[in-house]
Length: 355
Ligand code: LMR
Image 1 (cartoon, rainbow, N blue to C red):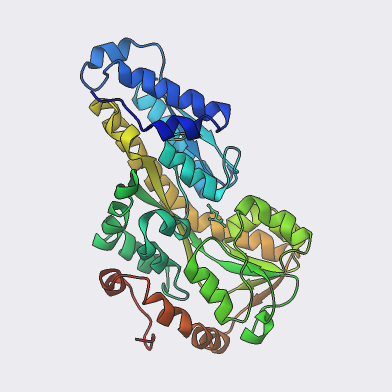
Image 2 (cartoon, protein in one colour):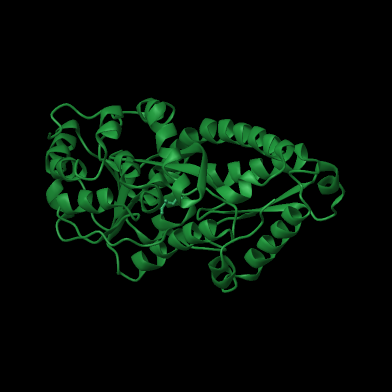
């Protein structure tokens, strides 16, 4: 069994936090025992295989809860041969750093938003960020559950990443310290977006500047006045406490936020086959759980944000939505240069989307 990793792996990972180094060393020790070839030796090893699962949201979100469900199922189904350490809320790494850490093998599992995956898997991931693309959750699921979703996950493999599955969050709304109702209301504002060329183009089309920043920094940047507003799902807004530093919320449902659960491919492929099968079954069940709670969690969070008088709420009318869509047409024109024809063909492009 070849357990060699590039020298850079160790050079770079030696600068990473202690838990990450420990995990790599443990994994190398298990791999050196030849677990894949001699299962009984592996079973006898006292040291469990550690999976460090890093994510950037609070434990009390659909993603946070499903990560813990995966931990519980994975540990039970492998009889303790695997231990899953879940690090929520950017405790280990912020958005961009965690992708680097996964590639280097310093963590083994992540669930980043699809918006952030273009840097690894290519621009087809950007397609899911197109504004007003999906009329409902089913329209989004039809894309990721079909051949286009499988093709997206495959695009991560040349970068040493294996995509396991998709987890939902939901539709995004805007918050700011002023009403955002018409396109003119966005002019000159600084609205935080995730690292996605499509989201930056979306805000530019509305007349705003779109600073890209890690989720963990958004609350402080809003409070300090470095940002005027942001877009996110109700659960993220509530659990990050963004409503405490913003006064207005606009129900626009203009875009969909969702995740892919991804692993370091070398780590995954070197797992003993029986362990990997148990982990796959744990992930299947954690995925059903995540996808069954995300929408309801967002509805509950939206209700809390809007009914408690914490935020002044606005809902865009169909006429205003039409105005937003017209203003955002350049985003579709620009995105056609980035997104492959195969991916575009799989999308429910709105009628009248520019060619
Ligand atoms: C964000 O950065 O706003 C989201 O991607 C966070 C998340 O993982 O839901």
